[in-house]
Image (cartoon, rainbow, N blue to C red):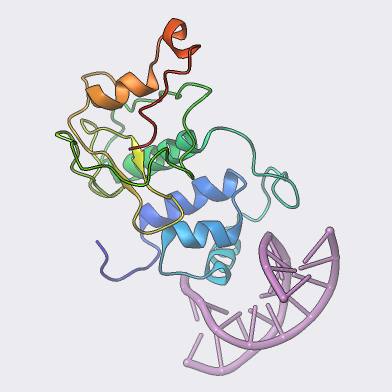
Length: 178
DNA sequence: CCCTGATTCGC
DNA sequence: GCGAATCAGG
C-alpha cells in the first residue's frame, strides 16, 4: 500500500472527510502521508471544496472525541472501497473516551494475545476498529483483532469502550489506549 | 515565528 | 492534474 502515493479514491475520500471535519490542511497532509499541506490545499480546491464548517480557522477543530474521528475516517475509506454499500457500523464511542495523544503507559510487555495491528487499508468489517497510536502519523494502526459480531471492537477493546456507568464512575478506565 | 488557507504557474 | 512557491492573514 505504501507504493505510489497519489490521489486514489481512498485518499480523496479521507481528504474530503477530514477537510469537512474542519481539520487543517497540514494535519490532513500528515495523516495522509506523502503529501504536503500545499498539495492538500491544492487538491481541495481542484475538488471544488474549499468552503467548510468554519470553526477550525483560529479556534479548535469541531469537537467530537479523537477516536470518533478516526473511526469515522476509517469508515469513510471502507465505504469508498466497498464495491457496494455494505452495512457499516456507525457506533459512537463513549463520551469520556481515553485520550489517544497520551497513552496511560509508554509500552507494555506485549501480553496482547489479541492484536494484529492493521492499517486503514487492511481494516475489514469483521476487524476491531480500535485506534492505536497517533493518527497524525503513518504509523497509525487499528487493533484489527476479530471483532465481536455486530460491534466494531474485539472483546478486549469492547470492554474499554462500553464500560458500564456503574463501574465507570469509580475511575476504572485503566485499560487506556493500547 | 508559529500557524492558517488562497493563488499562481511551471511541470 | 499536481504541488512548490508565494502571498495574505491570524
